[in-house]
Length: 112
Image (cartoon, rainbow, N blue to C red; front, side, top):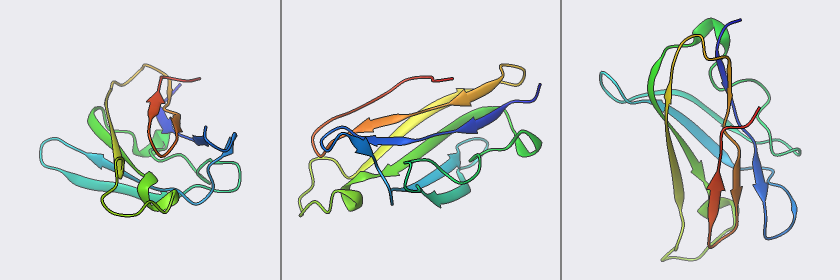
């Protein structure tokens, strides 16, 4: 079974999936490089894995969730871009990194 990376975003302030959140995936080593960019759909999910099994590269990656734009927060924003840095290893199965967010807080975990 190949490894892959997926995500979804939940708007905890409204109690619903967060549609329209821009997400970027960066590989941080050996030099920072943008791997994927997408926007969440009506279910708060991406249409395809950010890192499909066929393109999987182990190492340190960073998901960047643009929640300040999603919540249309005025400047200065308390939360703007939420970075979630993860270390991905080959052979560890499917990585799923959900983001639960509001304009004032966020949390994440390794989902299934």
